[in-house]
Image (cartoon, rainbow, N blue to C red; front, side, top):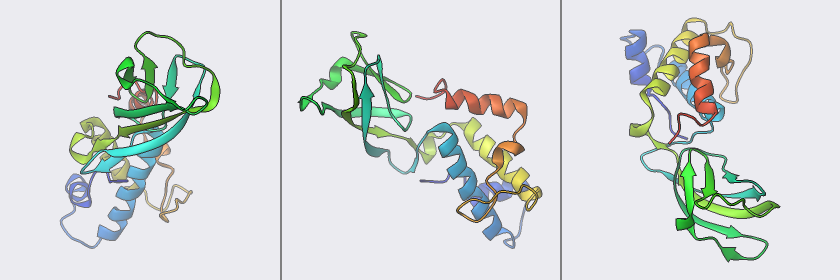
Length: 181
């Protein structure tokens, strides 16, 4: 996982000109990036998109993948019949793959093995997500110690409590896949 923003950008946003808080900011930036990746299902990849292999259930109009945005589909294999689907006969939107003819995928739990490229390079991360990360880091920095829960990184992860209602609406749009692509 790459970070959505860097410590230098966070320091500029917070108007910090010294290095005394760099360790705290580094933890907050990493935790905010991890949290946003989890909350949105998006993959923040750094300098290149990532190739992912996942198994998906059949039976509906879409194969739902765990990461977004899907950049390209490398292959789809029906694991029940060991046949490869024709990738050109599929279309991609956000984190789902559908058939061009709108047919349903044959039913089966974890029936399809999908290899796809996904994620945002650091240079492709939407500006509003970067701003959301900056706002969360800023509020967590100024309110540090008062949020109560601790992440694996050893700092607060109760970032949702720091969001305004407008920011929550924006985050929900990404969660629903409407802003991905």
